[in-house]
Image 1 (tube, rainbow, N blue to C red):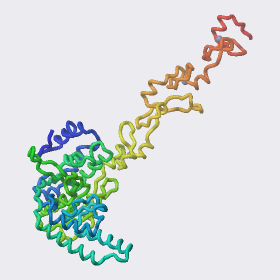
Image 2 (image 1 turned 45 degrees about the vertical axis):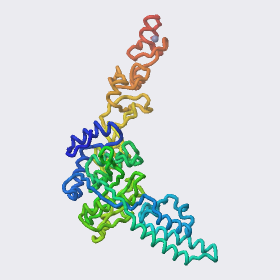
Image 3 (image 1 turned 90 degrees about the vertical axis):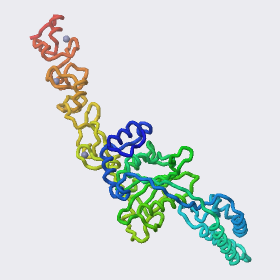
Image 4 (image 1 turned 30 degrees about the vertical axis):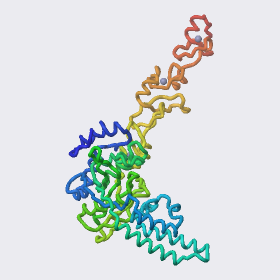
Length: 457
Ligand SMILES: [Zn+2]
Ligand SMILES: [Zn+2]
Ligand SMILES: [Zn+2]
């Protein structure tokens, strides 16, 4: 079942039940209708930005900052730089193509200018060498490097960058939130159905102005869009900022290109020429929600003042991380709720429930009273679930009360009062069957008559 453009709750539920959950299993919100309604209600401002649509795909043409062919001029500059900085490849093992891109992703996943990156590296290297040798030509090497980096810049500008067309989809539909972890470019995502953090995406989904952004390329083979990146978005409606978190992308694409495409997307959405990208401002209002340490950026228009509160992504935890007690409706952290009579209740309701003393099960049902011979004190009653009392206990012939079976013909109490052992045959005998004609001892009527026991007056 593919995802329809027009949907309502029934269509969404059918998709969940017959397709998505059937295939993947895992968590779904306890009250799916309530969750769906929240998703629809809480995305109105962002949908207004999408001109009333629940999702929209934008064509994003960018110039890739990465150059793939080797170039003789650049190769010669590289070999000169390497003669000054012989360990630069060794020390930056993952950055083999650094000389072929004006920007570079650093280990913290931020993007810096390649020349700045090389300069910073060189500064440390030069200092180290100078420290270890009196004759190290510190200043000379600095000047040489600076000239080489400037010719590298000139060489880049002569090269043609490659044009790439990305397709960015901004989606606020209930389908898109449920699908997090299943976009094909984020296999390690802990939001995947059935993973231990499945709930988080549903909490994000029901929160105000969140969205899922996917970046796709056109697959020439089948003319279909193929996702290459997925990121969670949040629209800060006061400052027109866009906060992006938990970026996942396919290895063969460059992070810098993906960020570049997000900047273009921002310009399209807000119809502006300027956008700034910065790292690490955004955060979730709750620590309960998983946030990756990398791939978190904010996009904002530098001409609009930054308001801190707009950088907090308010996450609605209710009905997912907090559930209502189904008796008193108090909100409780989910793990603090206890199931009684097949409903989830809070701790306080738990203590107001009653204990069936036969099964040790807690219940809010009215319990049946029965006499329990295990009780130490006389006249003490125990209580149990009516059906269990009915099934297990016996009705006492003498007092008509239910009692817990005790290998005696009547309840313990009636036994104490009404029964004794016949001194002759040893049988447990009801008082009514003890001969009143016998003065000494208790002898049953049958022993008196059968055995012709003499009666003493
Ligand atoms: Zn309660
Ligand atoms: Zn009794
Ligand atoms: Zn007897």
